[in-house]
Length: 453
Image: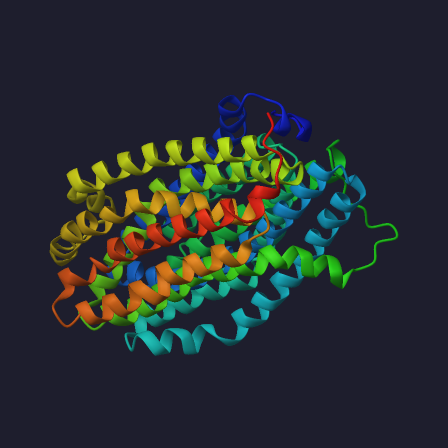
């Protein structure tokens, strides 16, 4: 399974298949989480204002990743289904369309990077240091985001064929480059200029661009189950629509996290900038829990999509079962770490006493959402894999807008400590909803599938 072999998704022993496909993605996602957190660790050594600036910029960075990954999910879902149906020509067409969609997405964000960064930071702060650092950081990340968009679409295309090793290497190149360059550009080590927060942004985009270059080389110069062909290519609006039938709900679903952070920052800034920093630190720390689960989802989505396309109900549900169990183990471990060692986790970010006083109860409280989030996160992937992206969207809207923001705003009148309880409450509601959606799917589309081995 280290090579592109989509046929094995319909025949190989399920647990072994999931682990062979998911472990590379899980490993690469942990590395991704590592370099996200390293960014903040280095920036926090400048001062708390630097950490606040990066925390305020984080929702827009999440939006960039949301559009890139959401489009990639649409490509992944459609490619894997076409391979399951045996339609190689259409799978190739989807992959080629995906490459162009990456370029178009970058152009939109590059223009936005020139226009919105100054008014964005002016809305949140009148502190000139936070404003200047934030504008320089976010402008760089947005204008030079082409590496991110193109690489992720190529990564998701290969994952749809069952090739998980090369996508892992794509991410490793970007992550390790960023980790190495961060201190060099931030602190001006050796002949590198001392650029502070801007240096962190430069390290990030250089890592993304190098990752993209390697991805292009692998996809176009090596043999795979699918091929991207520009000769005779004509953009098909019908194909774009089919990609975004799953992609748009996924984009919106992931973008909701960005919207959540924007509004949560607005609630928290009323208490203190330290509260904003704590939420930013939480999101970097929780990535070590959620990123491996997202990697697991990357490994199981093409398996689910392939077997749905092949109409094999037993293998589809078996993949879902194993994914839920593995995710539950990861989430349980994360909950234990956050509850037992919150001060140790915070200590990595050069915290002030105020950050520690706010952060310790915050991490313990928010981590209560990890275990109930297991079903919601895995079932979201199931819905995407079988082309039911709207259900994933509805589930995320419920978790991150309909429930959490009103609860957080209402609890803010009680005190900052109460705001953090909005997270586990929202995940509990989402858990019940996900189970109801799944039951509906079992008695609907899944009844039409073959119940064979």
